[in-house]
Length: 275
Image 1 (cartoon, helix red, strand yellow):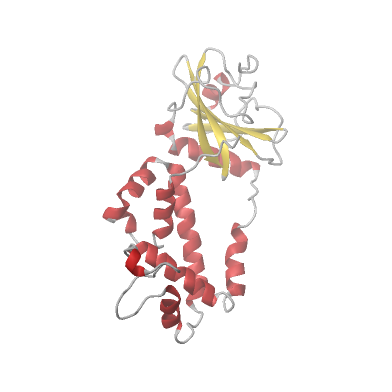
Image 2 (image 1 turned 90 degrees about the vertical axis):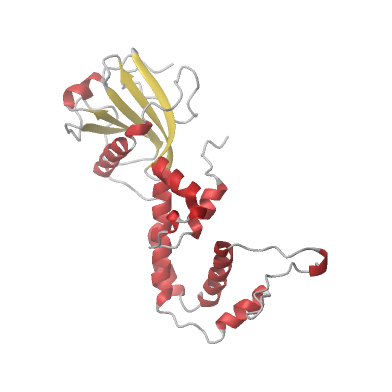
């Protein structure tokens, strides 16, 4: 069973329609997108990545000369008259039998962009390859990067802490087990689906009886240079957030604790696996 969350297709279409460097999220048609970007950091990160890629592609095509007569050929391919503004007709179906479908501004823009990209592909092949190569394939992370990214995400998602279901009420997804190195008894533990290190992951929000809070991130990725169990002291200690990471097989565990090393120590007293 695929546990990957599926974003609303309307949001994905809206993200694709936003031109890089523009303020189209303030457009009345983008009210839903703007609200969801503010509520969900994962969606906002996706929006920023798409904007970055779009900007890079635009830079690659910017200096490529536009072939003479390209605009007329694109309009002809779409079956649109430059003077009449007629929309494309459905092939094989008389226009009299079905009223034409009016396409929105952003849909027409994507059609034109697709046509331009096809026409310029041969001329800009080398530039396009150079643009796309950095985003192909899974990215690797160092141990230091993993700890810092966890600390950043823990801080940014403070409002989402404890919003998921209790593990005792709803089982977390298979493949992302809780670690027996982390305190589980006398603790309230809830779980959330998250994106961590650009992968599907599970975040376990842990609240101890005294109110101390921590999040355990579990993701299927191998990172070199990590211990095989929760370290006795945080590898990234800080007064606001202390963080450590360890590797168990293909599972990466990262514990982010709100507070310094003393608070961190309260979360590492293991009492057996979570049941």
